[in-house]
Length: 177
Image (cartoon, rainbow, N blue to C red; front, side, top):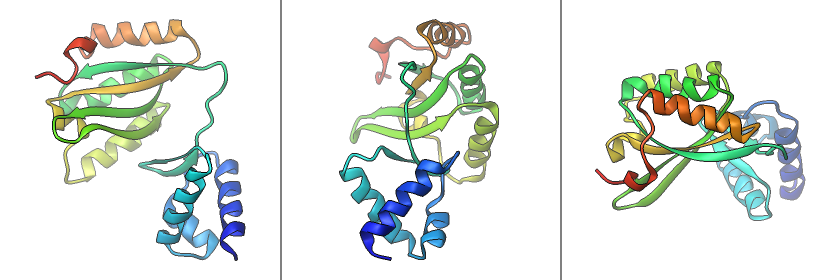
């Protein structure tokens, strides 16, 4: 299969997928190596395909027109990660990413795309199984989440729930320890 045809098929697979598709799965389906998939993804991104890489694989992100989003600056312990994420999804939010402001590297952002408790549980299983620290640990627990919701009222509700649990920090103190 020629590169252009393969990238067309790759795009079709991602557009039809209900969930993220792993690079390994894509390489098997298209009969190429994972490295070729990584290169194809980079080429597709260069022509404005909104392909993102999550902990579950690749997906084409399509924001629904009536959605709104807001960034929340939060701080909590590692034991409170699951509660923070569940607080957001239980109140109607979709967690798009996590962002930290590192003293040396600047802004570090990772796409999460977590929209329900099952996805929170799956993410937490990965956190527990890996021998590494969560990104928030690079900045003393302080980090941002971009959250998408159906309305500003839902975002206000999420903000209040995070504030009630003392997870919310003011944006002026973000990145300062």
